[in-house]
Image (cartoon, rainbow, N blue to C red; front, side, top):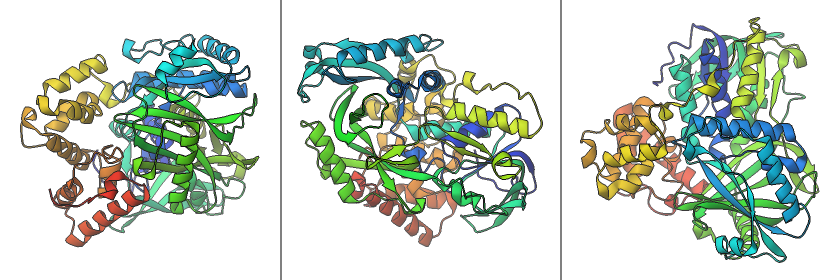
Length: 563
């Protein structure tokens, strides 16, 4: 996938997708695989905003039973199965443990009923999945077994526990990038760092956009029969750039969501902890649950949702907000004893909200697909307001069905995406087999970390290793990481140092980036992309600023020391 804007200007596309978060990427992939001529553009790097800030879970909707939303439970189970099948190298089942207490909605009786109902609704949840990707049935456990699993957390009134299974993305950024790569492989014209100056057309019909290349300042016009606005928190900005302002009535209330990467608290399973915040569940407005999930040698804790007013570009987390969340986690899980020094990275982003309730942000529950021809008498324009990573593929299917109807191609051809694995999932039996292949290609002294790095690429890991000059078995861990970064620049449209370090690898978020490696990457990108010295210095400064804003553990040491 190479960045080439020449084909964008002068071509009339069936569909232009603006915004390459997970929803935009899934729309482009689905449409291209159904035969449409598609372009996908993004103002930053792919998935750099809301999608990057995912809690990394693909969940089966167990908690929606509290809202009596059985349809959403079923949709979530089906989409979890899709992701487990599509990306076994990136997504795996994960066990969850929660304490039971009393006789209310978190008592043994209610949770037993919820687990049984979830199993019935999802009786086909493991159909066509590899054995390693299947999720067992949920069950209740005794007080003794719960304390064996979570000895540091014994809430008053403890009666035992509940166990269920969902799925975790080991690298959410890579999942999204593989969707973009799949779209490109199906013929989509793809470009990042392309901002939209205006939607073009008339007061009643959108026919494309005027865009500007943020790398060289050049301008171009992209024409399309249908344009999909998948800009997430920036959706209103794009609507204001139409021939007449369409933002009125389509404005988004936003919530600022925060997830923290910390030192590891629990190993091999996720633990639910009860906060002091009040939930918005229909059944039992009890205290809100947070989850402490294992992620490599870390834990990811979240999600706290805070009200937000202002432009998406100005979204930041203050140290006081991070500290307050840590205090709440420590109160809910006394054995954690977390401090700011334990924070390795702060994932934070904006998602749709539905206002406030009892002083708390009420999060939006469902994604929305808006046909502006019906709502605003503006043909050629569709907006997608996505809510959950889990159901992005399903929302994309509904969106592409609408696009076909707007193109007067009815009935739309069937969606084929759900049966096609992502690129890295093609050509290997299961995750264990992939691990054996990778281990066989490496020196034993880099086996663990090298395997973690290369597993993200699935079946194309050998192609990544071949980018470097040395034969694979002789590579050190640092050389393997360098190969990954060089591959990202040459084959995956990485054009910014910040994006390369924080989106195209996950080592920085884990506090594991080798000392001085950012400097090495800056030198490599300067050579590959022809940067001037001034450009390289500005890229390093931007990466350092990003590290500081994300409370990155790497940022608390020298990012650019020699090495």
